[in-house]
Image (cartoon, rainbow, N blue to C red; front, side, top):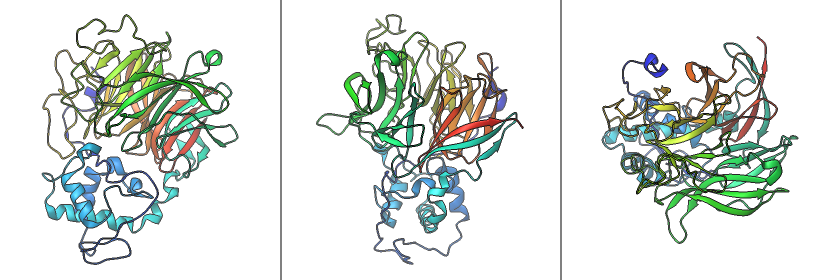
Length: 493
């Protein structure tokens, strides 16, 4: 029996609905309202004297998964669709489908939407307490079941790296860091950032931008680096997930070659995936999200969305890929029925590829990837719609694999790695998963190739975007808003 079955015996409503992209990333400006009462500075309210208890409950249940329980993601941003009362009311009620935000017109009454908007704006009035310090843990010392952890801060520079999406180590111990805004840096061992020239042009909007980065297994000989990103359509407004290969030398990328271009392009700006991972045989695995087209992409093999793919290092297709030769199927597909996988890692002993993916409202999953298998999205799921309605009553179906572990409520899983060194006694071969929503890490306890249990660790470390093992055998964690990178130094309890 899977651990997921042992952890819960009933489907319950998750409380992790994401209200994506009322805001876009950037510097802070505020737009004045023009017609509402009780104006205070640049913020206006319907009624700032009301009791916000129910609005706070609605925020925590429906909004905190994306924007943070303390509204971290609202700080220091340009409000893409406006910060005035009318804009916020319209955004919550009607949504922005192209940006992945659903409408809540059937979830809340107009008065409840007004209360929610007032609650958000009132909290923003105290945003000093949510300023850069919010991304800093309250303590740099943590206790787990078997180890103590001391944090070593390598980067805390909001002005340059806001969202450290991808992290990869060079042979000399320096780190390549992608910022989702579109740039790539080298973080040297002395803590200095060096901008790398020649990175591909990205469209940084919504969940898109510069995504993952991975070295070729023979990097010392060929200097090849792989990058995934959201690629804008030439002469159009749509976007897709793409992968380029480039040579890296002296803080510059040269000889860029596109080795994958997701098909088709879509006008949405969410669910790109996309993690990169080489296996022991030199195949490149990567994830691509369903692009917000759950009823079109994940269960159909004629497109790339909602899949795990496997290609050769030059972009060509391995002859033994499971759908090679099937009419109408994309030959790069390795598995399908995925939602938005943002974690991909190889088991250090078995060589199997594992992934985790975001569920909707509930139902984040951890999966062991098997060739040709269907992982069920959206036919089966342990989640529900963001607005509280259901899209399926099924959690199991013949021919569709169950997750090794799932989370209710959603933790907004992002980034993962296996423990590959002896630096963390008692954690050998365990999986470390980041949580964007709850600002912690999850240690998935492994027994061989199976999940045995889990432990929440490093509470309040920040919105975790990525986790990597360094060549020195230590864990490195990237958090966002503001961007920070920490090294986890273990000690005996």
